Amino acid sequence: MATIRLLLGIFCFAFAGSFGMLKRDLLGQIPIKQETFNDAQYRLQLVNLARAEIGVREQTGHNDGARVEEYLATVGLKKRQPWCAAYISWLYAKAGYAQPRSGWSPALFPSSRLARSALPGNVIGIYIPKVKRIAHVGLVEKTEGAWCLSIEGNTNLSGGIEGDGVYRKRRHLKSIYQIADWVTAGRRAP
Image (cartoon, rainbow, N blue to C red; front, side, top):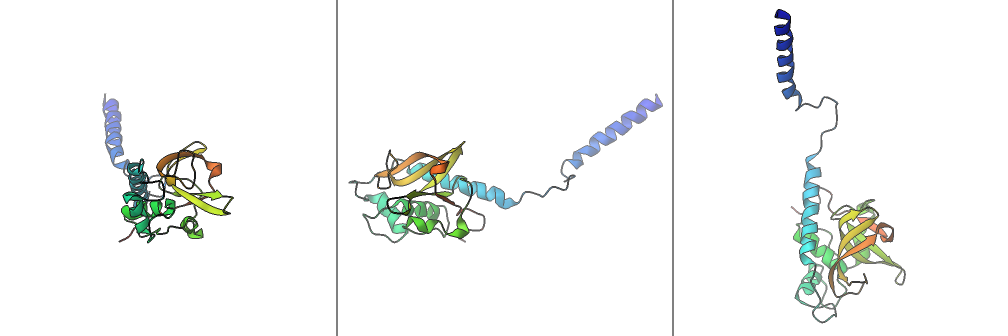
C-alpha cells in the first residue's frame, strides 16, 4: 500500500511539474522572432488592399478614370500613362510603406529586393520580349502548386500589359521573370 502511495505521489508530482515545462525550450530551438508575425500581417494587409481594388476599370480605356489617376499620382505621373507599377506603389503607400514609389516597372526589382519565392504581398515581374524588359507587374495573392494567383493593374482578361483595369490573374511560376520582396520587416514607413 505504501508503495502504491509512493508511486502515485511521484506520478502526481511529475504530472504537475510537467505543466511548467511546456513553456520551456527544452530542445534549444531558436525562438520565432516577432517580425515573422508582423510580416505575415503586413502581407495580408497588402493582399486585402489589392483584393478590394479588383474590378476598378479605366473610364474610357485610355489609362484614365478617378482611381487610375489616384494610382498615377502616387508616383507623380499624369493621367493616360501605363499604371501597373503605379498601382503596386499605391498599394504599398496605402499599407504604410515608404517604398516602392515608381511608375516604371523595372524599378520595382532592384537586386537588394529580389526574392526566390512568391509569398503573398511580393511583387512579380513579367518580362515582355517585345520591349526586352520587365514591362508588367502584379502583387502575389497566393500560390497554388506551380501557379501564382496575382492581382494586377492595367491588365485585362487575357493578361495583356495594356489593359483596362484591376484583375486577378493566374500565372505559371515559370512565366514570372523576377520576384521582389518589399515587405520584409523594418521596411515600413515610421
